[in-house]
Image 1 (tube, rainbow, N blue to C red):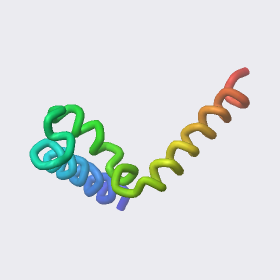
Image 2: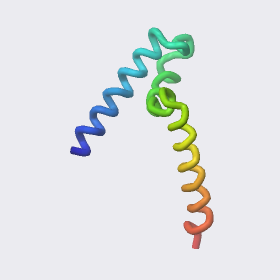
Image 3: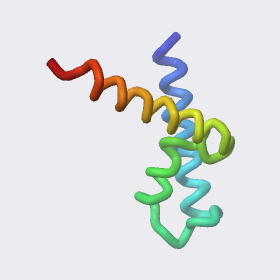
Image 4: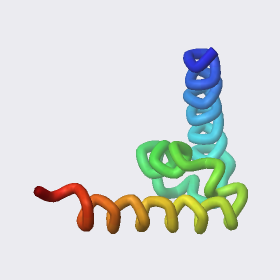
Length: 70
């Protein structure tokens, strides 16, 4: 089941990147830029989700600094 979900997500990445490269607001930036944006496409489509992901990454980094070192 996990492989199917990952496969669908990768397919959505390429669809989002191709759309952004040809018809998106950042079409002038090139495919590599749009592919990078496509990796985090849920955060782009839902701005509140991007903030939540940012908070989780920040908390993970703080946790690594606090508890990850020996």
